[in-house]
Amino acid sequence: DEVVLMNLQVLARISLSGDAEFQRVLHAILGLFRGDRALLEQRGSLIVRKLCTLLDAKNIYISLAALLQKPQGGVGDGLEEQKGGGAEQSAEAAHLEFTSLMIQ
Image (tube, rainbow, N blue to C red; front, side, top):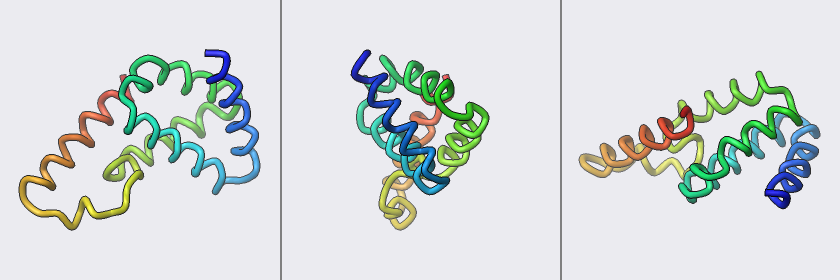
């Protein structure tokens, strides 16, 4: 956990550089969570709580909510909307499952 907390301090400092960097950091964290469910389930709460102590908690939650409203949580190449039929429904189901895990 110590390594995770030190990395979060670095990411928080990067986030203070401006809104674009703040969004980029949150986007990257969501991408990590999406790609590694074990990380989300085991350390996701710790990561979000620590970011909230290092940065503006309200801004973090509002920005995360905005990113989670987008398909793939703002993560991806936009191809999800181009796929048809079952693939689109499957991507939507995966997005809803991920969003559900994030808000728990």
